[in-house]
Every structure is written in C-alpha cells, then in structure tokens.
Image (tube, rainbow, N blue to C red; front, side):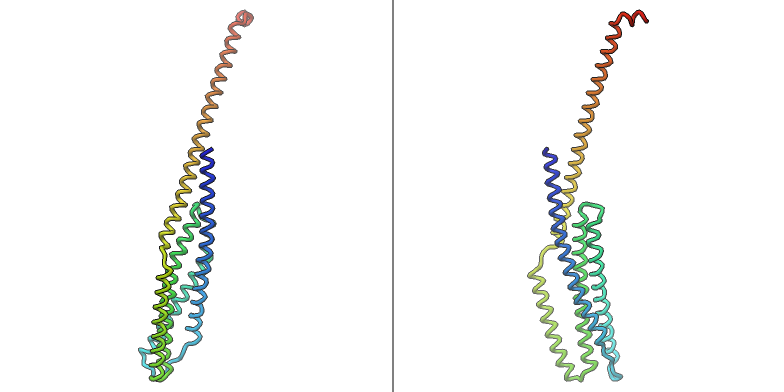
Length: 239
C-alpha cells in the first residue's frame, strides 16, 4: 500500500513539474518571438534604407558603412532563424523525447539558446547603430554629421546603460534552476524505477509461494494415491 501511495505521489509531482515547465516553455517561445520580430525590423531598416556613397566619400568610410550593414544583417538573420527553430524543435523534443525529463531538458536547451540569441541581437543592434552613424557621414555635410554623431552616441550610451540596469535588476540564476529541475526529474524517474523493482520482487515472491504450495499439494495428492493403492487388496492380487 505504501509503495502504491509513493508511486502515485511521485507521478503527481512529476506531472505538476512537467506542467510548470510547459508554461515556462511557452514563456520562452513568446520571448524569442518578440526578439525575432525586432530583429526583422532591423534587417528591414538595414536593407531597404541603404544609401549610396558618393565619389568623394573616402573608401574607408564606405567600407565601414557596408561592413557594418552586412554584419548587422547577418546577426539579425541568425536571430530570426534561431527563434523559428526553437519554436519548432523545442516543444517537439519536450513532448516526444525518449526520457521522462524531456520537457525539462527542452526548457534548459531553449534557455541556453535564448541567451546566445540575445547576445547576437545585441551585437546586431550595435552594428546597426554603427551603420547609421557611418551613413550620416556619407550623405550629410561635416557640421550636420558631427551633430548627428553626438546625438547618436549619447542615445546609444543611454540605451546601453539602461539595458545593463534592467538586466541587473531582473537577473536570476537560470541554469541553477534548470539543474534543480533535472534533479527533480531524475529523482522521480529513479523512484519510479525503484518502485517497479519492489513490485517485481513482490510478484516474484508471491509466484514462488504459489509454486511451493502447488508442489506441496501435488506431493500430498501423490502420497494419498500411492497409499490407497498399497491398501487395496485387489491391486495386490492383480500384481
């Protein structure tokens, strides 16, 4: 009875843990979709608002402009592709994995890729700013370019400081939480395995008792038959 209650309790704990991870997976999916949408906007701004340098533009300035545009486009495209792959492969792995902790493993992998994707998006945004800064020097005069450079520099500096502040305030140990989830899933699986072994040993013990009882009954029946034959005088006459 205690074994059955323990198995039911472990199953309930595992089911609730999986349900929580499903909610967390949906949250990560929503997060990656939002980052991917912003990356698509940056890709569009980089590609469709390109400027053509004049003949008087220094080659190094044209090189900075085009290189920053291409790097920003590549990094943001990586963000878009990764977000789509996470949205497709993460839930599939969590639901169809080989182990009972597949949902926990899928969430941990999605968190890892989310962090990498956010890093690529930040660098893509930085190179987009460099692209816009160099484009200002390509199309505008020196006085206007200097003013735009100062405004862009102060604006990006403020954005960078606010980003660091928000990340610091909302920071928590994600991978430690993932490791705890792995431990819970593995303990549930180990407990289920132990319960299965205990149940198997109980069945084997019960089967052994039944076999012993059957052997005892069969031996008693054969003894009674042999005794009745020996006591029957007609059987002795036949012999």
